[in-house]
Length: 73
Image (tube, rainbow, N blue to C red; front, side):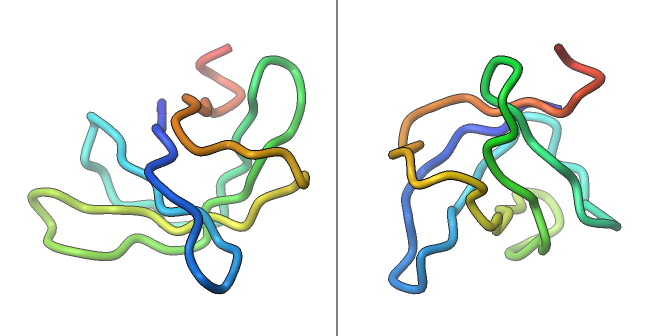
């Protein structure tokens, strides 16, 4: 899956959007290139148009970047 980082929340988590609109049932590690960038930990919002919350793995500004799962690399 591919996720676009929409914004950083006040608590420091990342708000993500995906074109695939599938719920994430487990913690999912995301990568930027070959580097681990974040871990998705929750699906929020309506089922038809969900958003995702992720904990960043680096201090890098990821807003606007596209993060992918390992199988998409």
